[in-house]
Length: 345
Image (cartoon, rainbow, N blue to C red; front, side, top):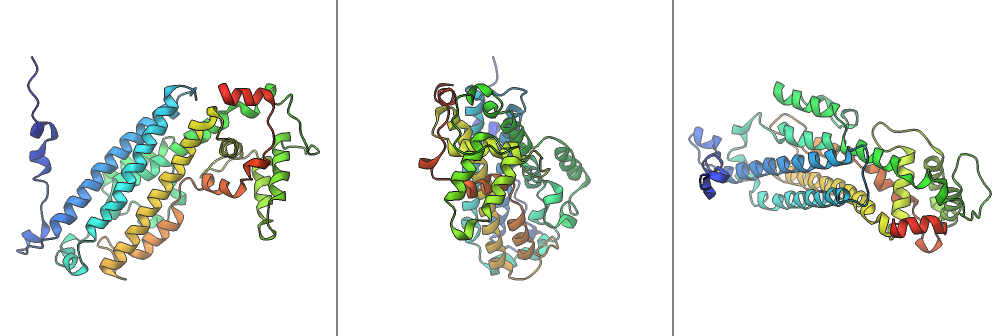
C-alpha cells in the first residue's frame, strides 16, 4: 500500500515557505516590503515555469510530421494557449500588488539587492526564445546574457538551437492544403484577368481589397502584393506562403474547418499582446519606483524596458495581416468543392 499523501508534503511547503530570505535583515534593517518583493518575484518564476511547461507540450504537438486539424491535437493546442494567456493576464495584474509598495518602501532595501535584477530571469528569456524571439531581433543584445551564470547561458543557448513555436506554426501553415489541391479550384469562377505568379483567388481578392482602400491607404496595396506573389521566407517571421494561409483563415474563419486554426492564430496575437502589456506595465512601474535611475543590475532602467517593449513583438507578422483584410460581404465566392471541404471536412 502506498504511503498517504499529506498536503504540506505534496507541495513541499517547508521549502517554499522558508525560501524568503530577506537581505535587509542581514544588514540589521527590517524593510517590511522586501517580503512582498520576494514573494511576488518567486511567484513570477513559478508561473514562468508553468508557461515553459505548456509551450513545450504545444511545440511537441505542433512538431508532429502530420497534424490533423480535425483531431483533438489542435483543440489541445488552443486550450493550452488559452491557459498561457490567462497566466500572462494574471502576471500583469500582479503589478497592482507590487505597486502597493511606495518608492520610499523600495529604497528601504533596494541597495542591498545589487547586482540582482529581473534582467537575470533566465526563465523569462527561455519563454521568449521558445516562442520565437530570435537573438538578432532582441533589443540590447549586449546585455542579453551578460549577467547570467554559465549554466543558465548554456540552457538558453540550447533552447535557441531548437525549433521555436513560431517556426512550427509557420510550417503548419505552409502545409495547409487549400491552395495545393487543384480539386478545390477547378470550378472557381475568377472575375479578374489572370496575373502570372498570383493564384486566381488571390488576384480577385487583391482587386477587391484595393477598391476598398481610402486615399491615404494606397501604400498597403504593395504590401499585399508582396505577400501574394512572394515565395521567400523571413528568418525572424512567417514565410509568404504561411502568411497567405493565415490571411485566408482570417477571412473565412466562420467555416467550421477554419474555426480552430483561427483560434490558434488569434491566441498567438493575444500572447504577444499580453507580453507587451506586461512590459508596458513594467516600464511604468520602474519609472514610478526609481525614476531615471539605473536598474539594480546596471541596465538603463526604463529606457531599456521601453526599447524591449517596442521591439520584442514575436508574432508581429500575424498582427500585420489585419492591414490586409476586406469586408466579408465582398469576399470572393469559393468553389462548391472548397466550400464543402470547409463546412464538413
